[in-house]
Amino acid sequence: MPIVVCDLLSYTGTKGGMETYTRELYRALGTLETGIEFVGFASVEASGMDLSWFPGRTVNSGISGENRVAWARGELFAVSKFAKSVGADLIHSPASLGPMRSKIPVVLTLHDVMYWSHPEMMTTPLYTEPVKWMETRATKNAARVITISEFSKSEIQRFMRIPDERIDVIPLAGARPTERPRSVVPDQTPYILATGNRRPHKNWDGLIRGLARVDEAIRPRLVITGSHGTEDPLRAVVAETGMADWVDLRGWLSAEELGELYEHATALGLVSFVEGFGLPALEAMMIGLPAILSDIPAFREICGDDAVYADPSSVDSIAAAITRLMTDPALAAHLAEVGPKRAAQYSWPRVAERTLEVFRRELG
Image (cartoon, rainbow, N blue to C red; front, side, top):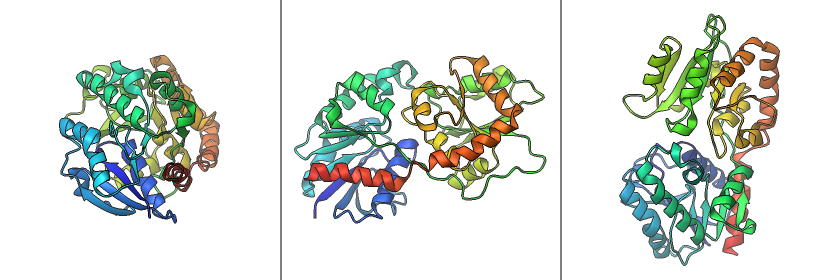
């Protein structure tokens, strides 16, 4: 039976979408007759978490995925060394970085190339060039590269010069944020839900400033989740715009807490400058939650015409999109109806089956 080592050094509980991808992909692989033995090479943080979703044994690497130096060294050197020690036939690096050199073939999932396309929006400027170097090494070493959208593929080819035949596009899928039907709480003030980390490309400032320009008579509240720090960096723009009574800044919530917010929300707000995919948009469609999105290629690729779009660089455009959805109940009802139908095109079993095909090609 062939052995595939999964690189879980980046899995620490704080990485958002890439961790969702890893967890849901391997959970779905566990439901298939793969004929493969999976071994997870886990960070110290992951080893202390519930990894029951992983379809095989996991080994504590002793490497912290939160210590950037230790983690980088582990990605570059320790993963391939471990794979060799267990007699692996293939390595899967699901979080954009992996071994710089390996005799064992590597399948690398490269989600986006934002460090290349938008370096000015990275929160750690001193870290940008090292990440670009690591991505270059990992990509050159990989036998195959999986990415999550046609847009990401075009960006990878633009910056990495990877031949078309070495890249597989396998779109992500979503997990329903709540199994309960959407419902409006009596006397509830309408609110837009926005969820994600506080990196600049998410354009939270633009969303808050756009909200401030919406007529107060129809203005919804805005709930933004996803901050990890004790002091949310968005408090400054909330104070500057006088939106303290309208904007609710939440930290990192449990799945149950986030699901409850999705259940009662009026719309999703996501006006990023750039994304490789956009899981929150897909998951909103799954439950019929209308979405206000930035007009960027990745969102158009996922949602087509089934969302309200805004120019992320224009506060007035964002305000107009919010106003349009809040004043057009027919539009909101239409988006709630068509969203689940479009989202049904994406599923984790399909992601797992297509990824397994890539693994088998390389193992063959």
